[in-house]
Image (cartoon, rainbow, N blue to C red; front, side, top):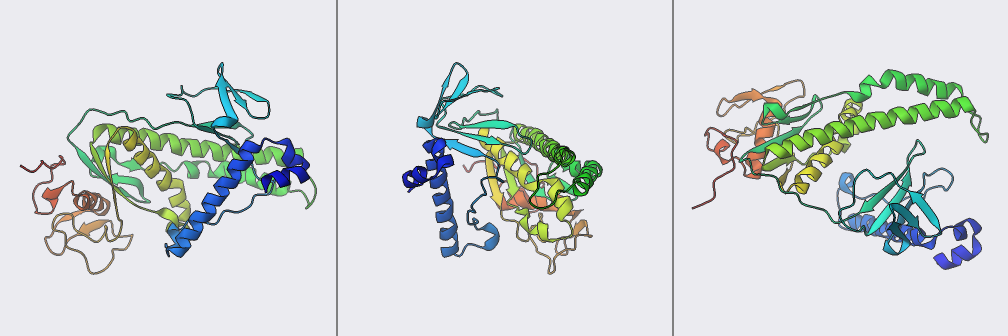
Length: 336
């Protein structure tokens, strides 16, 4: 089908067939995954979405090249079709890559993402574990006060400038069917540049925090929190600014890179259970109530700290918390 399409379409025939074939394969895999989720009755918020066709003149280019579609020679990237690129390397490749994705961002910058086997770089053991609870007031609350991650509010800091440039775009908005003016394109570029800056600030903060947490602990009990539902609440703007999903992904990626054990804990009833005795409250706590008081054993603790401790108990990393002992934070001793 692709061969026949290339014969009848000039612009399709001008490009290399390697990324076009890979695009067809990726679309087929995504469609099969979405259909399987629907057949298996996967909940809608966890279901893979149906792939959508992108308009050629509106979508940013993104091309995947398999092993036979590219090669590295003299520090330069040679792509099929006679394309030679000079790459500014961010790091050295540990092994030969199996594929590369060449894509463009909203600022017009081009990037190359290589696929190489994952390396595991073990870190020395520390004998400590940590529980992580995600939230909106603080991005991450842990069982260690020194490793809590406050809400940086990068998006709120940039909101004033962002609103200024967006109003500039609105005033210079071209009529339908006509190209935008130089002023509209300049304002559009400033908006994209500001969004890119905020995204990089969030990514940098998440990576530095994840590196510190993984370096100081052998095992992590992380809440398997999915922030999609927050997009339909009044906390949507603040939750998006917290970048919980990106921070969680950075933590898991860093932990797996250094061989740390990661336990994903289901988030159901984590704010209702007591970390000391395991009792559960009859009603869910409102968000305005920030102190958890157990009616069974009388334990009183900050709400998020109690949830972080529940993560350890559910992951089996803190058995002392279940029998009302003193949680020391150390790994459980192996059975004799």
